[in-house]
Image (cartoon, rainbow, N blue to C red; front, top):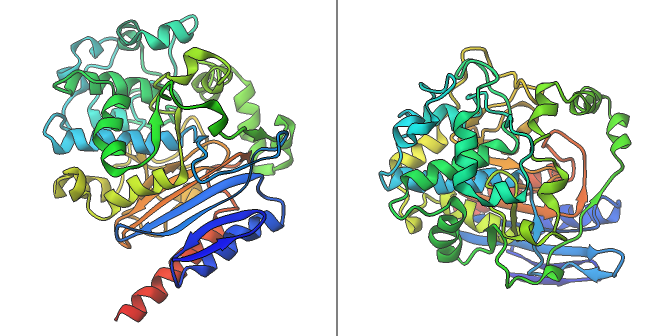
Length: 405
């Protein structure tokens, strides 16, 4: 791999992937980045590993090779891969009812909800009707499970999909605890069975020994700038309406509570929908293993086929009742569709995070992709910084394949 180093951009790319480096560097030249990292694996081998800019602008601290970043909903896709391994190990059947694993779940109209429906945002469990989910409740998984089991769906499960922004991870974690023979949390299993064996640095719940100065500081544009984008105006209005599905989905716990590194209780909090912290290389390494077939993790072909399969659309169609746009979910992951077309191959699976981070697997071209950053954009998950980068990746792979033949 050819070494590169400049004032802003560091890392390496494999021969033939120089265009990816150029597309990545271009974002810095136009002021689209403060600090970020990008990694790509192809057929199990790393072909792009880049980082640059500043992890903390006020301290003039550079983004390092091992800089970590909170990636919000990009966590969802990685958490889903833990459940996929549970499926491969025979612990979990996607088409069985959730209450077969978690009997207390069968309350208030949830008796017939299947695991597949729950993971595909079709269960209507977009919020938690509980006074306040604070750190004390979120750390007490038994108490949280009792609260979740009592929740009533916002619509008839299976008829529509609506983004379970925070709640998906809470339900996934309890479901995982019920099916794992050791009773582990999803975050602990993820570390023991996926991240550590692959040498991938990504955490769902930050270990106490990780120094906070390794974590990138995030820079959000003022909320009012959301309304300068015509496509974002309806989203912003619904977000402020606490009675809307969108407002309810993001209100409990509050968004502020889910990114507070100053609070000791946040740092090791496992929220499999939103609290993942890691490197871009860690994200890409994990997705790359699944894109290459997952054999090194014990993934069965039957499970990979499930991940590659098209989403099963609810009876009411693909329009997401929370986000207000058509989306397709499958088994805790997003499928490339409409505003979230993160991958050109329909068999791909992954998910973006608030601000612009992204991880995905393309099992057709055997690509694992990871990107994180600290300049937070407002968009619907198809960040404009990534379009030229993805185009360059696929052009490079097509050239690579042509040379190989």
